[in-house]
Length: 396
Ligand SMILES: *Cc1c(COP(=O)(O)O)cnc(C)c1O
Image (cartoon, rainbow, N blue to C red; front, top):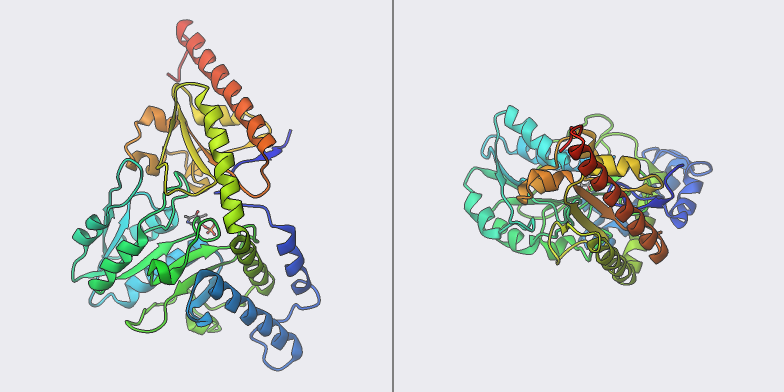
């Protein structure tokens, strides 16, 4: 049986039919290359591209459409921000600051930069996953090029105090980048209000297509200098060469606008569903909520069940799509680095299930899922106890 209740909206989301509808003409009739300046096909593609750029800039509170650089997704945007800023300023500044709970799209480029000779400070967070701005201040030096802090965490849903972090970075003349893949479209997020200099996000987390993202790069002074990762046709002011996927970008803009227009009602609805789910899961017993009560992504819940192996439970649980953590991290089948950083003991980290409630979910689905999970957790616990008593349990 294929999954019929989808509760993994932090990994990806379905394309909203309204987004698909906006994209369709750009796959067929309006297929021009936005860099073709000598005919109407190209000019119309360029017009659609620039229209989408303006709408995306407006939706995230950017001052100017030129601050949006299109990429293939958040991973590329994070890499462009981190490696691009680090390499452009290599001569004077060779230090970066980030946190232990970043996505691998931030942590792994940091590792790559360390191999090139940069140094990186990985800051700890508290038991709720919140970063203390004072720790950022303490980590900054004359050599610091960039601070990178995700606006919201995709595993435990915590929202960081970016505005305070941005203020102290600005004071010290250090750039701030934020991975906002989980924040933009889900919470009220504005790049100027947050005070970030760079910001990465993508379409497939907000009911848009896979394969397109953006890096916001603040214009004005002090100038943000970036060394490109890709060299070629010079698109995106030379920051990201390659033919732009106009259909995906048109969909990206529409997806973002829908999220913005429905944000207030949708986040209230998701918060309600989340609390409904948590109330029912608590009744199972031995359930612990990971991450903060607030501020938190409205559709996010992360629960550790005592005495279970979450991977085994989820594999058994047919018909409900859930994960133990970030899709990329779970592929590695290592315990979650995010839960470890929050100080969750290994046995409870192994029993953690991440819930990502989203646009299509109904109260009935939440009730069905809660009931099925409760049954699966109880059955798994019984099986483990039985196995232990019979002396055949290997996984205790
Ligand atoms: C999903 C995600 C990414 C990776 O985004 P892609 O567009 O799939 O490359 C990076 N950071 C965070 C916080 C994410 O949630």
